[in-house]
Amino acid sequence: MRLATIRTATGHRAVRVDATGAVETGQADVRALLERPDWAEHAAAAAGPSHALESLDYAPLVPSPEKIICVGLNYRDHVLEMGNQLPDHPTVFAKFAPALVGAHDDIVLPRASTAIDWEVELTVVIGRSVRHATPEQAQAAIAGYTVLNDVSVRDFQRRTSQFLQGKTFERTTPLGPWLVTPDELPDGGWEVSTVLDGETMQRSSTKELVFSPVDLVVYLSGIVTLNPGDVIATGTPGGVGHARKPPRYLTDGAELVTRIEGVGECRNTCRLEAAP
Image (cartoon, rainbow, N blue to C red; front, side):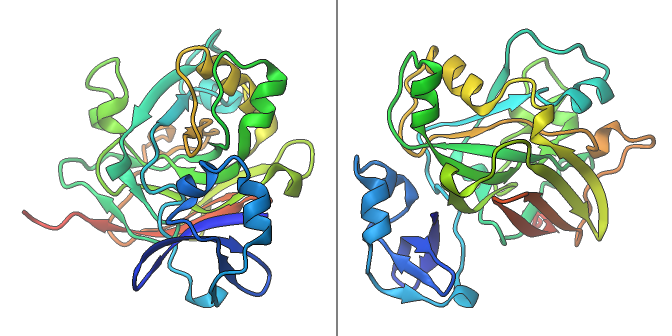
């Protein structure tokens, strides 16, 4: 099953995305849907108003998550290209909801920087509250997966040892287009890729993850209760612009496609922030 949050003339709506259309579930967005204990059964049986696939205007999958938790240095190839050692524990930072945009929205490039980078990330969406999870509980708490592009303002990110200020500029982070439930996905690694202006910049597999989605839910739930609609971005593979020689960064008008095999893709145009 695929679930999305779309924009309509009367506001956001959660929908089930089928082969022939998108059916409203009765909730305002995917977070509200996941807060129902019976969300899967409810969404599968939904028979609300329908929307044509070609007309869908995707909002961020979860427009206002309680938590956006990001994991850095979690692909072996990316850790090595950045000159780091494989971590013993996840590197964790956060984003705020104003950073999010929809899967086809413009990415706003802040005027404060000329060192803005891409990072495709397999992203977990939590479907039930969980604290101090066992691996089995962690697996059951995962409602599904989506795509996040952790667009990173590298000069701000590297001003201090804390990543957050370079990771949460407003309207920089595509999330979507939909959540895909785990039963829809094959076992094993899924290809992860970024294409910039037609050129493949990142291509790897989730087999390269140092800490798996289940590992991360176990670890993070030991710190804080994870709740329905929480988003966990699992890190990016090698091929980021900052690690290239010379570095390569995003520019006004650049076209980005970030894709996870079997999950979906975000297609975004980069636009320079309007002058104040």
